[in-house]
Length: 48
Image (cartoon, rainbow, N blue to C red; front, top):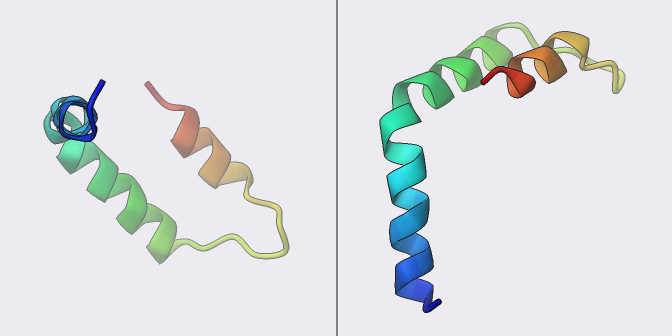
């Protein structure tokens, strides 16, 4: 697989989920967890 093909596949996987990815990032930014105890963040990251 070439670099261009890989890039295209990544875009295909990310683009349909862009709004969800941005929303998760914003939620993490608004409610940061400190001290390496990212319980809520790990739950968000595991969501399908």
